Image (cartoon, rainbow, N blue to C red):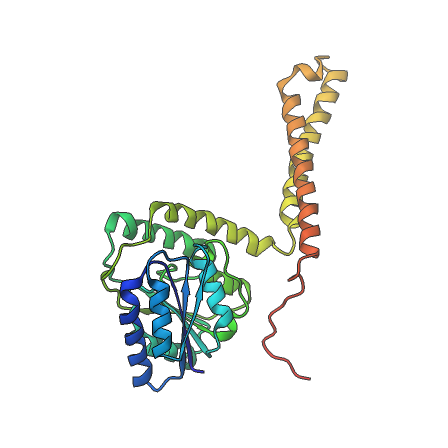
Length: 312
């Protein structure tokens, strides 16, 4: 199969028929073999009924319906599990992403040998204050932290080689950082394409300021997990050692000072409590590192490594 198109959605009943017809036209014009995977993330409107009707008319449609809203990351993760195409395209269901971009995204992926090609909505039609400015700040921080130079990490329109989506797990709110998840899995070739962005035709945006804040929290989380997931003691042990040594050195200083210099009681000096506090924090960090190592060593994916080629 040439292309799998994964479309997460919630309450997009008005746009689904138009989107499916648009995708089908593009696929037929380019003679692509394809599948459309709709993932209904707990819609409360008629989205699922419309998907069921579209399935009767188009045998290349697959669909998943969540019992409740689990978020875009969960929807993408389940869609990726079902995807069989050599190229996997993700796009939003609100008609703001154009299916006409799919052939060029696929061409860049295959001919220029990128692992991921990300869309860049250079000209946007969103509200400036609620989305445009926060998006620019967030993308600048993501570029700096990840080392991946993409203008629009959160663009829903992306193309992936099949092996990429099969070797990453998207969870929480990590759909914003799929390129970074891929980087941590060993994929290095990232491309970018300026794509058309259309005004929303139906419904209302699902974006809010809480997603902007959560984006930065998730970035910090994924940077930590990506670096220390397999060896948490390297982080907790280092800081635990530094805190404990800091407290221990102060305690030794206070003891020497008491017996050889001013004779002031150790417990009468505020510095003594800083020393005790530092040693307690250091011990706790060390214990956290040991617990993290135990969890890491017993994790089901502890020996899951991406093998690019193998000769028997």
